[in-house]
Length: 440
Image (cartoon, rainbow, N blue to C red; front, side):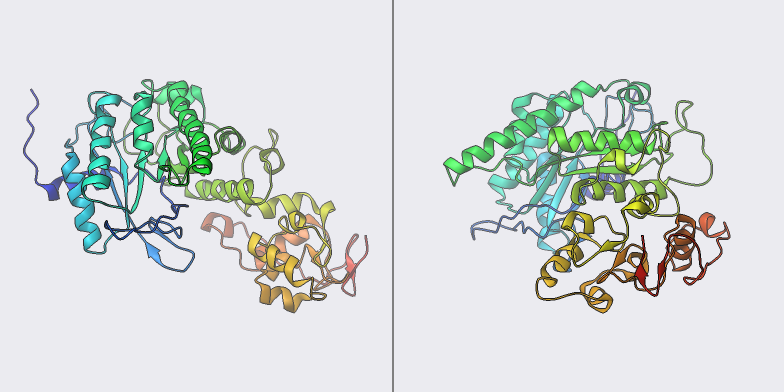
């Protein structure tokens, strides 16, 4: 027999905010909707979440689970059915009250609402829909809302929810169908991808409706995202970024989030505890690679291969790619195409835009590049200005690697203990630049 004590709103809040901390799929909103003067709140394009907006503001949202009850028994989840934890749920009115009271106190600018599965996917989605409907229609809340779509729920419910939320996400959970079958036997890849496709198709239809009718209601205007757990299963980084690339191409996702596996359950199917904690460096490298896929025109097979399936712990993926493809460098910044500039370590996409604009007015030198925002301690090995390098530099992988490490790369302790020795920029050798002039 199960005994359930009555919990106060404060107790529920403590339980359900703590249960939501493992869901990392929250980011800038990517949508802009100003208040029309009749309701409360607004949704600016600068974004909502625990993050910094483009104008430097720190922004936040209320991040909760609707319930930590769950009918599923996913081996990696703290809220799985077989765990002996205190269970509770909010009512739709409680979600509305919490959101409004937090907003009035200027604690938040929006809501991130996820949930366990209470009774069934449809039953849970109906409760979430009721909460968001009241928040939008009865409380006139016009701030940002990110909601989780539950695989297996009725498509009509998902569509109705999409007209109330700014962003919707469906968690992929694990990179492959085999891993999902092993650790989350109640979930299938088909059930997860079906609502993703539904949201994508409805977004496309909605864009056409808006072109015809300017005042047509917006369906998930900030797009959709997903999340993968990293480190719970044996997939390589190469497999993971291939999955991410496929999702971006086939489902037009705004973001794929990577969550380092955290041991919250003891289960023989999970990796053994090592005492090293979550694989945060691996998660960081995957986010860096993800950025390259979305903004720097890289492809997954350029960053990794089946022969070299995992990222280098020493360098970020772009720098590692450059070291492995020195035949592509040095790049002449006064002539190189924008997409070529993006591949230079130390040059970000904003810096590349500034370079392209600035060189229309005259030739750039290294002083100009520093003012533009180029990180010269990384870029100097890969660029020339008017045919000259910043220093005489050998185009040799080991030579550049050692100097980059000495230049103050932020590395984990286990890497700094490898004992790399600095090499002088002026050491001789084959294939280098003399007097600052590159000779190929």
